[in-house]
Length: 451
Image 1 (cartoon, rainbow, N blue to C red):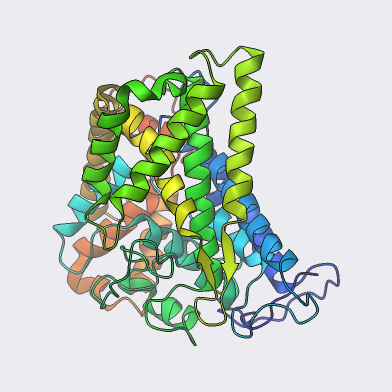
Image 2: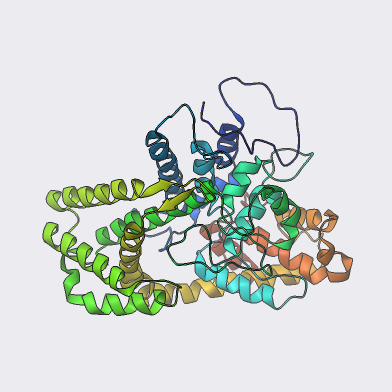
């Protein structure tokens, strides 16, 4: 059994079936892994759309690797203990299963088409009184505390306090005060992580925590996310021929300028250290990869060796502290990860092919939101509305903790329900439903997925 006992209380107290082979944190992991909300991530893009011919990471495979990496980080810290029998510092609640579960959950609320859809939903919701806009991390917290269901008696997956706290990568509400920290201080984040509708769940999960300081488990989950982004996505786009890892030196100054434009506004960000790490990886890739072709055996072997070396280094970059947040990340490794991530930003994300594709995706999500809103506001019980959306709206109207979404503000309740529904769709489902609502679909009415 894994260690860690401080946060094993569940949000909704229930009598669990006694199973000696699983502890409470392992139950959490299993609940997430078997949820339909988690399976949906197979149909949601990491960067490029999931219908690409190349085998790229999607949100599901990315989440699995974040979870696996999170577990390894805790295992490394446990291995480094002077006296393993004494365990981790009191109050840290560090636990392999908790970090792994947080990794599985961290993207579970992200909408179809990723960040571009978040922008569209944020713009729509910002125009409606009683709502705070959209935030993917807050939506993930809402999924596991409200939208995912396993029992009739209570909403959500009824996870433990430690797991819910680990999921909170940005442990504050939107309008609460935010701590100012150095870029390398992983104890704090820039965004917010929960809506007012989940304030009761948020406050319960954060009992005993300091302000907006992350839990140790959340720090490790966030670092695991960065590691996965930096290494696995980079490999994807080298395979796709989009990132010329063998000849990065040609674009070195442009990559550096592009990265500094994004990153230098962060407090304490060291431009010299970033340049140094970028130059190091450019030399490493250029010295070991001699062509753009992924299919040569030599390139595949060399790329795997490079990735493996990075993963090992980044796991060993975590260290224990004697006070909250109880863990820290070696600064040089943080700059190395930032340099690796910048390659994907420069060659893939901020390029015309993806930008053009995203314009179409924005139209799909925007049109889908508008049409569903119109139908729901007009007649919430209409057969024109998908059954799941009707159920989500009904739950919202019956939630006595949501004062802003009472009968006095029907628009806010409808918008929240439509957003929740869209964030439970795959990209293929979003496209199909949008075409049906626009009258452009030739699909059969029989056996539809939304009945």
